[in-house]
Length: 208
Image (cartoon, rainbow, N blue to C red):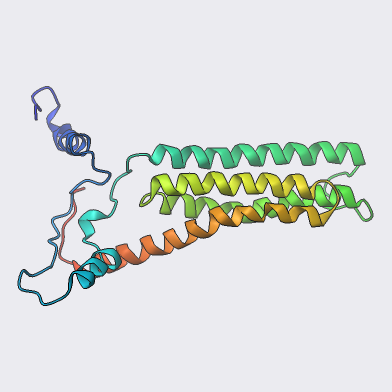
């Protein structure tokens, strides 16, 4: 590894970047935490495997932006673009049905109310979706990017069905749960793994 052309204050970061690139690793080995598995352990291979899954070494967990995380970022950007589209649809409906601000809903116009409610439902879920996407995506970037796309497609179906004026047609948007539920489970798994790894190796040091 050649570091002569790299400024001294960037040499450490450059070396880590080279290590990630050359080894094809998603996460750098920036933690000095040892894997506490004794050679003479009487535990079965299954128990060892479960230990690695449920309480992996801290060095295996992300402490920097992983490879493919750009896909997660693009899904997040897509959710904001989708919100802008839904907002424009509501603004258009306000003009068509003469619903003035600050009225959120119309007393009798069911079609406008359905369009407005479809957008409001999206907004209610957006913060939770983005938090789950960006945090869980640090551990499972490709899976979360795919699940995020599935979720957004479901939200489009939900909006299109609801905006017809028939609330029953919004149910097709339930496919969004096929994306959201795995993301939630992945987020919980990531949090549990990181906490268990931290408790298991509380003496490890991380480079800043």
